[in-house]
Structures are given as structure tokens and as C-alpha cells.
Image (cartoon, rainbow, N blue to C red; front, side, top):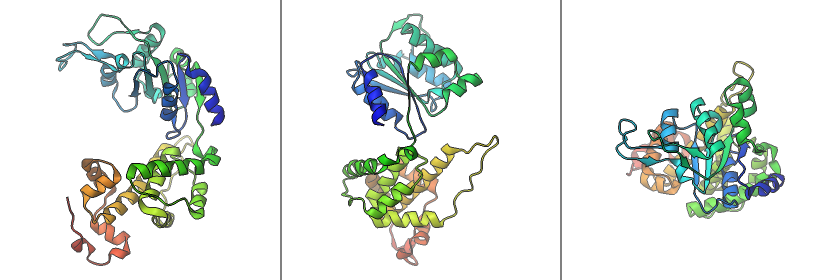
Length: 328
């Protein structure tokens, strides 16, 4: 990572496009923000475009903006993210998922530094640093014809591959201690120093979800403490693991495995925080630093109830669901 840092520092002061590749959770956006803060464009905005989260037609209007009357519902003109990033940084997250038509428009933007709003003939100029990130292998996508060759070479002028956390195990404890400090301040809850037993667990895990999974794990540690986190580890080890089998072609759905692991950890944290707050969901939402609506959604998604709480925590005893008030 020190080598990557030194390479990146050499390109920060240039306007060159930057391509960041790496598994989900390896810190691509963090590195992009690092570059922005040290670039010629640091006075402007850092504008993130999530190519995987927004459908193509909607993404085009959000990206380039539109003129009044360009389509049904366009009651006023609206500038897009490209204009907002003028003299700043335009960050395309998961660029490999960008639709073919938008790949062509992005290529034109990079070549000419010009674009048009939807429904407008006027060419507008923009000066922005472009950073792209992907968890896919773009070179293979180019070979399959899923990604434009000319666009690939345009965005990959400077190319960085971020390693998975399991390939940089020497950093795990340093990252964990940093996250303990950050999340203790965020949750306003003092966490004890990492014990030798906790450190052993940290070094033994595979971290398929990378730094994002580590951050979620440390959040549980801050909220539950050493005993609570180790008890959760024991329960997860005792519970049957999902039977992940290679899909057709001999591949394993790594994203699905990481997502499942994160969901199980989130469930553990939410359940314990609900128990600590006697199932008052508003207080639990405040403790978790999420909205009340988000907590309700996560409770339903995880299938949590007070009956679940009683079954999974014997200390609550029989009839706990009748004694503990639901709260707001």
C-alpha cells in the first residue's frame, strides 16, 4: 500500500484520468478522494456517479442534465453531475457496468471536454478530473466486447490495482485500531483496546468483504465489546455455513458470499442493540446512527422479533416477549 501511495502521489498533480481496480470493499473510493484532495481540482466538488445503481436512461439525464421540455416531466432545466464537477473531480464507480450508449458519450466527453444536455443543441465545456473504479476485470470485458476498447485506453492512462485485505494481512491490526478510534467517536461509545484474543480472530479471518467487512466487524466490537463479539463469533462458527458451490464455469459468487457475511454481522449487531435498548426501536436507531425507517427495514429484512431475541439469548428467559415493551 505504501508503494501504491507513492505511485498515486506522482499523478495527483496531473489532469490524467485514473482507473482503480479491485474487489468490492478494498477502498477504491477512499483512494479516489485521496487523489482529489491532493489534485489541481481540490477546490471543486468530488462528484460520485454510481454506474451500477441507476438505470441507463435515468443515469444519462442525471449525468448530463436536461433542458426544459426535453421529456415528459422536465418542467425546468436541470444541470447534471458533469456540470457540477466542473473544476472538480468526476468519480465513476463501477464503470464496467456503464451501458454501451453511455460509454460512447463518456468517450466523447473525455476526448473533447464537451457535452450537451438532453434536449439541448448547445455544446458546453467542462474541465474536470475523471477517476474510474471497477470491481470487474475491464481487460476481459474488452475482450468479450462488453466494454469499448477506445474508452478503456482513455480512462486507463494511469492504472492502479488495489489488493484484497487477505493479501495485506500485515495491515489488518493497524486498520482495526484506526477503525476502533473512528467508530468509538462516531457512536460516542468508548471501546476497550483490542485484546490478544480479538487480534488473533482478526488475523485468522479471510475478510472476503475486505475493509468494508472489517469496518462492520469493528462496529460490532465497539457496540458489543470483546465478550459480545467473541460470543457472536462462536455462534457463527456453530451455525451451519451456506453451501457455496462453484457456479457453471467453475466460478464462486464472491460478491454473494461477502454480502451474506455482512448481512449476518449486521443482524447480530442490530439484535444486540435492540436487546440493550429493551426493544425501543427509536433509541436503537440512534445508537446505530441510522434512521428509524432504515432500522425498521433492516429488522424486517433480518426476520428479527422479540421471540427471536428470546430464543437466541437465553438470558432473557421465558416470557421475555411479554415483559419487554416494544417502544416506539
